[in-house]
Image (tube, rainbow, N blue to C red):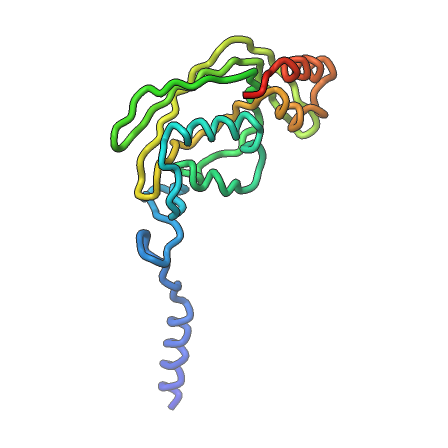
Length: 192
């Protein structure tokens, strides 16, 4: 009798210790599809039928400051190949504008050149921010990959933010001359 109770107790303990099986990627009850890399689970929803529209929307949202800061951004889950890999950054690059040029596209990949007009880099600490002016242009090539759920951009780690939205994010922590400089840049920018 004691032996039966002991065996029953061991069986209950072992059964309770088992992990509930997780849905397999691609199964009907899975909400993400794993690429096999940590942080690279794609949201299983059809999105982004055009890679160039996707890159332009990403740059527009980044320029508006929508992608800066902590927390999840649901749009990024449908836009990036590895949304879980996007690191939080403590700096942003302030830009006065940007332009696009499609480079190439085939059935699996698309590349688009984005040229930014640079203003400077804002480095932040807990209590202050400093603008390091850096005038010029910077060219970035965005690569998008076709997935079973639409086009996705390779993960981006830095933020290229227009002067007006940059002021909204870090303005109060900038020294007055930097705030005035960015305000002047933002005032000269024409809407797209």
